[in-house]
Image (cartoon, rainbow over all chains, first blue to last red):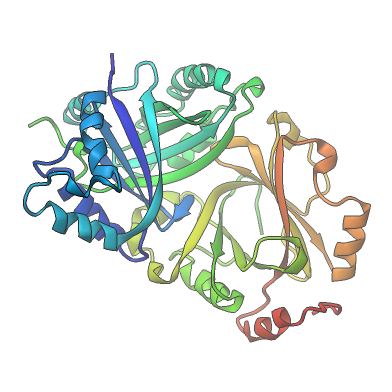
Length: 221
Length: 192
């Protein structure tokens, strides 16, 4: 069972700073002060989505999240940081202009970071990602996730479900499919099933590519 | 130009002056992607400043366009905010001589409604949202835009779940200099 809580960052990067921002955020998440780990940091491919943006997905326990919150509080200037943390944080601020965050809970069967890294070791990395942000009635979300796992899993070859979440504060679900390369995306789209009309989903489609240093792409050490 | 089943992408750029946005849009078209239809949203009917381009993706080569990533030839430093959609052509064609289009983003409750659409110049469906469509309804003059609106233009009569619509004019050739003067004229009474 996946008991983690996830944070979705849609980051409005300073134009032209996508890659350097990803490298900085990867570095920041691995400092000794980090209470959360960035599972993946993704650039938005300009064929589908909003850009210039970066998407980050963080995984933490509720206890880690509680410990991290003082560092996000604008009044928390007195929060203790280790040497060097402030310099990196200032770099991040220069490389982005704002963003939109959501807390997410894993849907039934959605893997945690450790499971994803074992999957990477077994099947290889899957950096090419289809992200769907789907708005629904609250009571339709379980049915949508069931449909996603049951119907879309069978869609095609090496593209498979990666993660699936419900948003804590919105009637939304966030679902991810991933493949080893962009080859096969057309076949996936051609085979994509229509959701049951009763669900009435409103879908935003983004195509993302993971920064190669993303943790979920690394096999367990 | 749109062939049924072909993949397309549409890109919207926001922020900045329209001639500059149009220049950025044309510069941003990825390597290997052919020109299609470029439109400038205008005056009283929609988002502004705003431009939108519809481009066909090379058949069977979508992975190549995506794999180019940040090396796709676009200079991202000029963009403030952009959004795009991956589309599949369902029916229709562009007419380069059209003066303007009503563009609609429409979400139906049921995918079956897409199959029965009749009337738009062009119908695209979103690749991973088969009940969501992009519709283009053309007009040959601004007078026709107004006349069609008064008669009930667009998909409202089909009772979709959601729709967002606005007017846009065809951007013409490579010389976008006329746009600066054209958009500075609030009268917009004559056809281009």
